[in-house]
Amino acid sequence: MSSVRPLADWLADANRLGELEFCAAHSHPLLVHCRTTYQLRPVDKSGMTIDRVVLERVVRPAMPPSALDEYSAVAVRARLGGRAFDLTVGCNPDCDIHIDDSSMSNLHARMTQDRHGNWYIQDASSTTGTHVNGKDPIDTRPLVSGDLISFGMVDVTFLLPSQVYRLVRMLL
Image (cartoon, one colour):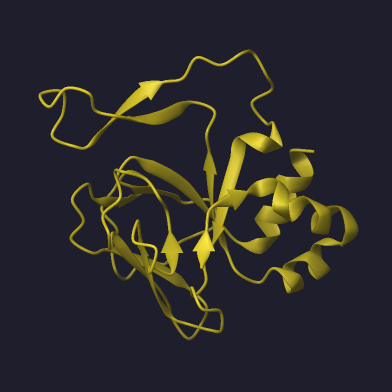
């Protein structure tokens, strides 16, 4: 099952391998999430919001914003391994990309890859929506490394393996 893991899981390979070898070993893009600014908490009063969660500012001790342990990531790949060109994203554990967050729908979005290797995203009629760089995704526009994808209130950055390698090396 594809699940969220600390970005540090890729650190050992980034230290041991060059960029080309790293990209060969980790050929799938990642959805990278930075937890330094906001966190989700359950709603304690029913009148607070129509959604099930509230975004609240996190008070944290001063630390460098690039601390590696503040990042987590999930690989964009099929849940059961192998190659798949139509992936499901949601909070249901049976989804290919499982993100356990209360602002996610069971089946939140679909990610597809065309024969040229371009990735696309489409909302699956989720409750809280899917956006790319603050806009509704357009089916004909491929995702570009560095695009910000919002699944409800979960913001992730779509990164190709070469950008993952550079990010991990930069955050050491």
